[in-house]
Amino acid sequence: MFDPSATQAASRRFSVALAGFLRRSPLLVLIVVAVVTFGILRPDFLGLRSFLDIGQQIAVTAVVAFAMTVVIVARGIDISVGSTLSVSGVVGALLLGAGLPAPLAVVACVLAGALVGALNGVLIGVLRVSPLVATLGTMAFGAGAALALSGASSIPVDDVAM
Image (cartoon, rainbow, N blue to C red; front, top):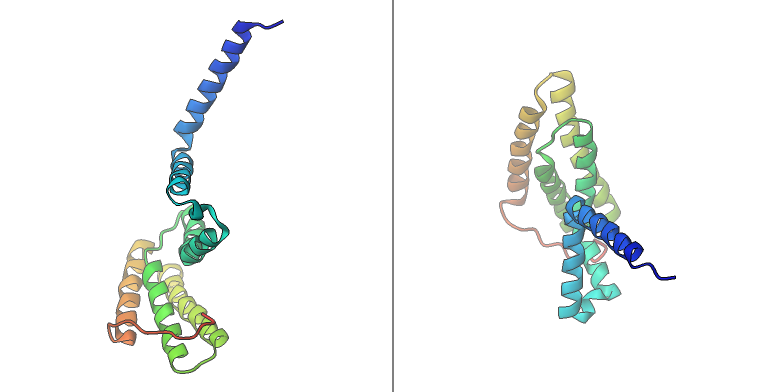
């Protein structure tokens, strides 16, 4: 037998659960709305090529965000990540421009970032400088180093491997 009161109760429970989900996950809802909207406006947006392009564009940001998540979870702060990334990128671009093979340039990028990280570690762990002050200083150092190394201009990289 069909019981309308049971259907209404189930409908109310679903509405309450949906409202709770929307309240707890507004970012997920926004992402779904954006993907659906872009998919309607440009059907090729939902294609594999589009998702690969988006993945390539956010790869560096995602890696840095994952690393920063670890720092924040450990109750730390590091505001020098952008300039560390800049100086690492400039080092890699200069080495590629000088004819160094791509794998070695990548290793040099990692080492440049590790050196800045080691500087942060020494300032914070050994010299007991506040993490905010130490990373603020290395942020300025990294930004200055990137500007000085690049001559305050962009560095073209023609190596397809990168």
